[in-house]
Image (cartoon, rainbow, N blue to C red):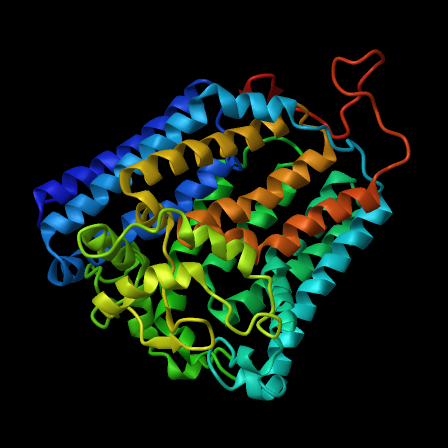
Length: 484
């Protein structure tokens, strides 16, 4: 077999990889491929949890469930991927992207950089609240990934901790502002210095997803203003570096404490086996770090959900979405506050022993646990119908954002919109979809505040309007229907 001991599971995995790769090649053939298209970022997240996890840890999933359950889970994942591609290629997404209101094409350099620095400051404020909740900086750093004590904060204050999620995006905003407005070399050097410090901080936190987002943001800051794809000689080393960093963080981030990576506590020979692929000297045993794989990985949640819903647990029928509205109501105002998504997923968590973290301050005790990725989440809502509707809508939304950028590549505001959507697309693949809007709302709101604040007084006419339109950035290599 290619990946696992099951021919059926291997076949579905090959089809899953083939469908994504086939659509990507079709976009390339038609000169429509752009690395920073939201759908490509979404595929990256999908590959991390719905392709790599079953390949790397297949024996665990076969033991916990059965080959038939894993095959069924991957089969419905394939269905969801196909529906996203169908939604992406349908006309509604194109129409929305073409009809969406035009934002200011030119932003004032000084105001843009000042506003972006303000977003960086707000994200740091979120981290300050985390430190405060633990009783101080040293107390917070005493535990790996930080000893945040959210229960020590009033609920309305805790909402602002979400500013921390804005740090990778805010850093990318600042860099992109420098490239959009053609800042001098010293300014860009300072921007990259900040980028390096933030990357070091995210590595210390052990957040694989934020490391990927920050790396992607740095690349986007350089190439989205040019409307060009990065060269393969840049993409390939970056991809290989991320592929090595991710397993290293997963294996050793519990040792990162007191603002140190504590490398002296890490066995370097073991780390080499964990990090390096076999052709660079790593071990051929892909399960090196999987021997102690705990319950509750993302693919584990997907298998549990598809196996048990609706056979043992009812569909949520959209009840999880009610939590988006109740999230922002402080418990002080509503002591018996309900957590709809938590109530919907708790029976699955409990049934499969995916988490032990009980929370009892709501109307009903709930379990807090691992993320419900888009396949698990939308299957929980309405099974195949949920996957189909969500796939069509997500695919259409990805295409709308891409078309919105394509219709005026020199528009600075449209470039910021595209950059802001990338973390959401990545989050929707990796995490519980409804939490993307909740966790990233400061970045989305901040983007529009930045655009409003930095709007230049003089704006060029839109393309096609009377007068001469001059793009705000050089368009070397740009073609009307695709990218060079």
